[in-house]
Image 1 (cartoon, helix red, strand yellow):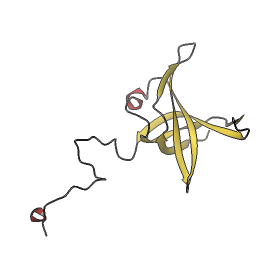
Image 2 (image 1 turned 60 degrees about the horizontal axis):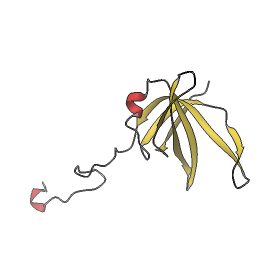
Image 3 (image 1 turned 180 degrees about the vertical axis):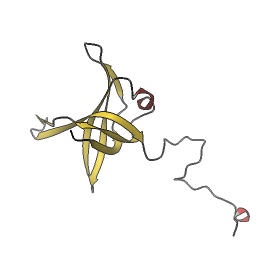
Image 4 (image 1 turned 90 degrees about the horizontal axis):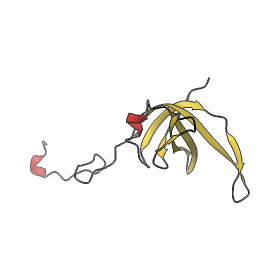
Length: 122
């Protein structure tokens, strides 16, 4: 069995769903950059409740590392007549990466704040 690790950003908010038999799962899309202006979109499915504590904090744009197993790629005809390939994975673990969402009242490392020259140690 091959293990797949993908680092990317969520393309949509996670959706909690349930099968007809009552099995719970969460689904979201993940965009991974693979070169200059080139991305691969993945459909990610997390089965059961074990990842629920993490998934509830994810939103569109969240940067994560997803680890799991690749499902069989699916070919389909797009609306424009071209053949596309759908990539999907069954996620076993998720880790946050990158900076968390910015809050309006808290400073960010990405945005330096002005420090008066009298407070500089040199």
